[in-house]
Structure formats: C-alpha cells, structure tokens
Length: 541
Image 1 (cartoon, rainbow, N blue to C red):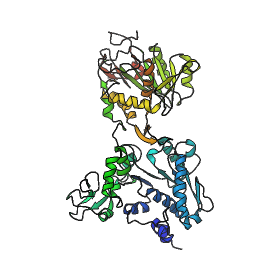
Image 2 (image 1 turned 120 degrees about the vertical axis):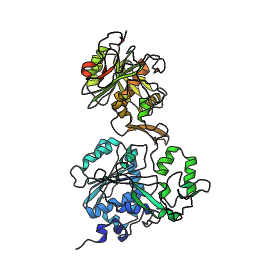
Image 3 (image 1 turned 135 degrees about the vertical axis):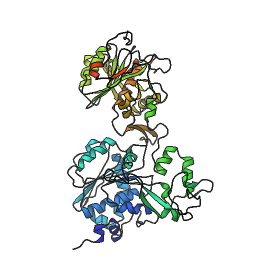
C-alpha cells in the first residue's frame, strides 16, 4: 500500500487529523507564515533563535508526535528544571492532547508528566540540572527547549543518549542571552536564515530590524529604503533566505532560523515602541527582538582583560596567594596585592607544592569539589596554608566570604556570583594588573571569554544575576579563588592596588624571564621562579 500524504508530511498529518492548539484553535499560518517552513523542516540539526510567545512551543509539541507516529523515533525533550517540565507538560502538552482525539488515542497506553508512549516510541520530558536526568534513556532526537536557561554541561551530556541511534537528531530553540553563548552560538554555526519581506512601494527586499523598520513618531512599520508604510500583509508575505555560510554547506549542515517580534503581524509597531521605552534593554533585545544582549557587563570580551596587561615588574613580595581550580587538570593562578604574575595548567599538584615551598608564607585557596581527595591531603600537609572553598549561591549576607575557625579552620564559604562579579568589575576598572604581554595571557583570557551573566528569577520571583559558562572556565574560577584569598591575606585588607605599583616581571604560562626581565620561550619546568640574582627577583622578606 503506497504511503499517504500524512505519512510524508507533518502538515498533511495536521490537516488529516484536524490537530488543534491547546486552546482548541485550528493550526493556521495566516499570522504565523514564518512557521510554515519550520513545521515541515526535518533537518537533523535545527536551531531556532527567537523572542517570547511566537508559537514555537506549540510547534515543538506537535512535530515530535508526528515523528513518533510516522517514523518511530525515540525523543527526549528537555527544559531547564524539573519544575519547568511539570509546568510545561501540564499547561501545554497535556492541553494539546486533550483538544485532539487522535493524540488521545495515540497516548492512551502511557500518558504521564515525564513520559508518553506513541505506538512503539516514547517521548521523555526531562530537566537539565541533574546528571541523573541525562542517564539511561536512549534517544534518536533531542529537543532542547529554553537552551540558554539550561545547564550547558548537562545538555552536552544528553548527546551521549544518541550514541546508538542511526539518526542522532538535535533540535534547539530558545530566546538568546548573550553573544556567542547558548542559542546564539549554535545559530552562528547554521545557514542563518532570516525572514525577508518586500516593500510593495519600492520593491526592496529586506529584513525587519530595530529601529530602522519602525517610525517612532508615526508608530508604524516602514520600508528601510523608501520609508513608506508597511502593512501587516507586507510583513506576512515573506520568505526565509539563508544569509550565512552559503558556500560551505558541508561544514555548516545545520538549519537555523532567527525570529523577531517585528515579523509577527499581530504585534503592532506601538507595542514594540512601548516595550523599548518601558522594559530594560536586556528584556527588549532577548524577549522582543530575539537577539543576544551584551550590554551591562553580561559578556566579557578580550579587550576588557588585556587592558590590564602591563610590563611593570611584580616584586613577588608580601603574601603570595594561589587560586586553584581542580578537576581532570589542575588550573592555578598566582598573585599578590600587586596583581597576577603567573598561571598554569598541570596534571597534578607537584607544581603547587613547589610553589608553596618556594614561597613559605604563601597560601592557596582551592576548589573543594573538583577533586575530593588531594586538596584535603594538602591541607593536612600544609596546616594553616590550604583553604578549601565552598560556593554558596546568592547568599543574603552582606559579607562575600566567611572564613572558618576552630573545627572549621581551612574552610571558606563565598557567594559565587557576587565574587565572580567582583573579579569582573575589578578587571573592568583595571585594578588587577596582569604582568606581561597580551599573547602570554591568551589561554587565561580564553577562559574568561567563556563565562557570561544571565538574569533569572529566584524562588521568590526576584530577578537575580548568575554567571554561567559556555566552555572551559577554569582560569576564571582559579582567579575567583585567588580573589577570595586576597580578601583575607591581601595587603591593605584585600584591596587590589592599581596606580603606583612596582611593575611586573613578564612570566606567564610557558614563558620565563631572563635576569634582565626579557621574556624568552621555554618550559615551565626549567624556569619556574629562577633564583634571585641582580635584584630582579625580590624575596618574600
């Protein structure tokens, strides 16, 4: 028996079975013409960067049911938290099923909040804040909803669930957060389709953008070329055009779409203007324009870090503090009240011990969670000099750090997000000098470029900022541990000195100075802190 149209097309399947939205409305594309191609797009890798409330949640509920019904794929659908899963499935998925007898029949044998059975296939709804959620469930298709609010390492863990699948499909959609992270990072790796409309007056094909496409005085959409009014129908009659990587389809095989509220015929110009005038910039860019927002210190760029590089010589005197991030590798930074003068990545703790012996008055603040054994052994070996750092998010106390005493000696608790913010602010104000040249600090700076700040709501519904990561951030965390140490052991009560410091010996990862302070390439093993000669290297005394 030849296949029917509904076997081949999700759109034909929707029409055949009269699939409706959660409100009981038929699925039409008059006000959502930009979703037509996305509904029928079955590219294995898809990325949709979008604003809020444009119909994507309905789309991503319905497409998986067709895929399970007609293709027999196993699906995992993720949201940021388990609470989000309960809210989403209860308020969206289950309501869509309730409005559609055909979907009720498909899911009648198993229909729970976390799992639904469709013929011989299943869809699992999971959060992304527990590694256990990403274990034990095989899949052919991963759908990641609200990617930027999800825990990125757990999202990556889910990819292992595709290991034994011959499909290995991955679909991502979210409103963006900051440039180069989350959904924006993945969108840049696609063909980057934009919605192009045509002005009926001058025939100019264009993408609607803010503020060029809106006349704020007349409160209407206008052509960016001839400035004639654009009607709702003008905005409906568009087409998706690829704008990125057109010459390299094999390198960038992902299908990507950018949706903006300006494309939505039901959203008038005065609503866009009102959002611009009454909402904060981050909300306007991410939730209205569907674009990443990099203002307000949300993303750290290279220039912010390298402006702190200086040829001045660090005396390496006073109390030296080491910040250490642990894990598969050990990442270390070294500095004092004059700034940072050294960083490294090693396989173990031998180098840290050499430095502790080289500087008998030095202390180290070490991540307590990445390696549960070696740092505690070091604390026993170097009593009073090793401090294990515990992060506690969003503490209400005014103090950034709480140092243990008595039985709690060797322990420090700090507010993770506020301490990272302090480090970023001090780099911004050029208060943490980095001795040496820009190229010497490349790996260090790379790790800072992988962290970004997002705004979320806490349990009380209050907006809070959290620092997340999109890649390796070990040196950023090591610097944060160093800064924790400086609050107690830094000169001047932990203040980082700016002007009037002594200057810096240019030594950093993989580089070492000769006795005149000139940098030459060499190995760390040979040149870590050469012996004192000619007064170039100051002693701790």
